[in-house]
Length: 60
Image (cartoon, rainbow, N blue to C red; front, side, top):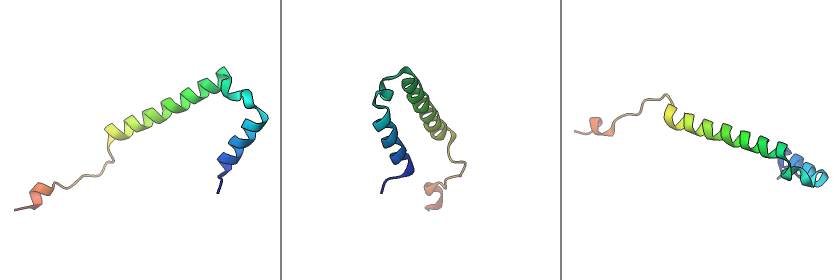
């Protein structure tokens, strides 16, 4: 089943096929990619905030 975003993307591509070749779209795509990269870096270095039990301490 297609999501609302899939339908919107299909509509835009059919009405404006040249949109992917514009500078505006390239800049927007780069911005989205940088935000996602920043989120991944923050998640990787920030952790989840939950403390993980040390398995070695529980074994005797």
